[in-house]
Length: 318
Image 1 (cartoon, rainbow, N blue to C red):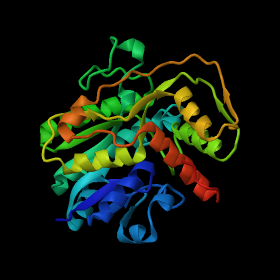
Image 2: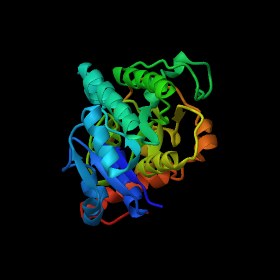
Image 3: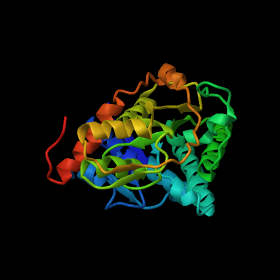
Image 4: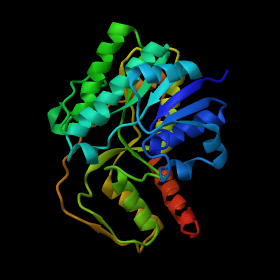
């Protein structure tokens, strides 16, 4: 049976991949997004996909107004992905309140008033601190939140606010803590460095890597979208927040993959010391959602490479 979803940020990087999965399995999708054109959806969604979704505007409305819209359309589930990027919050602290916290609370309140059955939203592994802030080994799902950025602090606060809201009002809400999400069509945000690196090598452009030994959890965008679908389809979830991931690897390892395909790639490696983010444990997501990454680092990087080369009219590599 098909359902009606609201996806905030539905034209963005992860959002467009989620929307594509929903509409192609027969669900109805409504979107709120500040960037309706010139966004990732232009590359991810076909004209048929775009024609099947409903656009509700650029901003999250006041709870009463939005609740009326959700009820009128019979929205059962909200996927809340809209958020200011870390590149914005670190230079504009007010964006954490105005563009992250306030719209999130509006979504929760509207969902409660409209009788929405579940809200799934994007948190971040940024709620955890650096590796030095935790004992050795992967950080468990229920570890203390020790963010070191304003973006991470905002997400950590939202996790606590959402837990409290759910206790008070009985609204089922689940946060997915995403790591570094990469892949074709990423257009903005701090993670855009992955696009510059991968596409630069694929197109023969010079690329500089300041800290090649910095390690990240690389999550391919299709895995991120599939994880969100698993979250909205799950019958019940015991945790208010689940850490998800992909493949832990350094930038140097990704560069090695690229040089294997492009031996003449112009990649300059710097000598900046890494400041490692904590490595996280994703076992809870595997247990509660059945989520496991399906895309290897090699396959994800190669898909990103070939998407760029196809756009440029160049032959794909294998």
